[in-house]
Image (cartoon, rainbow, N blue to C red; front, side, top):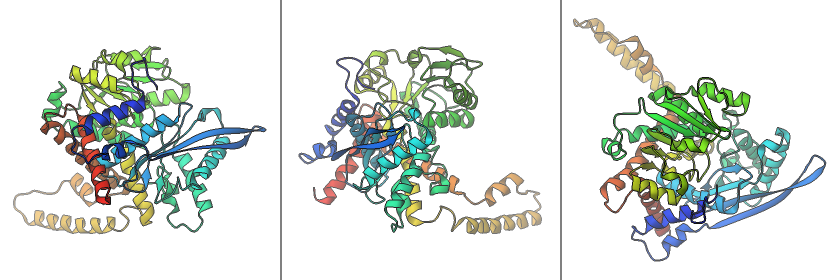
Length: 478
């Protein structure tokens, strides 16, 4: 989404503005900030595919923002709105995001200018394989150089096609499956990857609500239970975030904004039912038990505790930021708040949990998948049963002690069942993601709280991430 007025910064400009605002607070060697800011390289590929009796030409991009560590990492999106500026801005965000959560990647991003709904599955496979071919032969898809993942308009199906195309072109590469993440589990993927970004949003909010001083800064109180949340976008990220927050944390999803409008219910929407309704009807209109409006954008300004934009960039801008009533915004999408809106919201006292942190669940679990592919063994396979055996010894000893005790105490069946069960791959992935999100939040929030010249969490996140990238470049001798 581009500018909303002549004075509104573009998405790429917004990223640069926020970057420059942060690096002004860092003591860096001359020229290093500019080296980090600029995109190292952007490749444009144009290729033809014979479809429906004619050759159709498609344009795709792969931007490599920073190679301070390799491989570089970043999704591939399918959208008619894909362009070079957008891809480069997203690649920059990936660099900062990976640094913030200590994923050992530089930033990259890819896109294909296409409407995926305009083609059937076989046609999409032909297009995807040819796009992958063009990138693979230039080493723009490679386990040790450039590792894509799903993004808007793509999913595990497309990643499976890309992985297979790479394997066909590199038949002796034992690490071929690590060329892309977000694959189906049966095709080398990892449990929990599909839900990862939405789960990361949940973990980000949980960590925020563990800190009373941060809750107070947002003008909120208590915990997540009962909080009113407005969600923009019920795609993969928004759906999983809403599902987990409502089912596991007691939050109320009071409104959902989609392409055809918005539905709302102050008591909370049934996210599973709404997702099924959209699948059957193509939109939210006429969803039972909810009010409907065609002007979905107006709901961004409705009363709520937390606003979660989880779709496109630039949905909160200078023209509507002043009307936003949420006290806390969680950027589940990439760049949903423009630099101009960011300033307005900051002056209003709205706390923003920035995209480079809130959206980092996907790349974190992609990192776990990549490690799994390189190690050629699933997590938990070597130690799970050993863990259960050791736990069994402890339980048996406790039961023996309880029988010989005069106090009458005994283990509860629920405790015994839970304690004896070794961790599955999904549980280990969720544990690793939770640990990552907690650590990154505290790195970011500590800078926010401790420095009077750092006005918000976004600036703090840039300071942490850019500082790490700068350290990597300095260590290399730059």
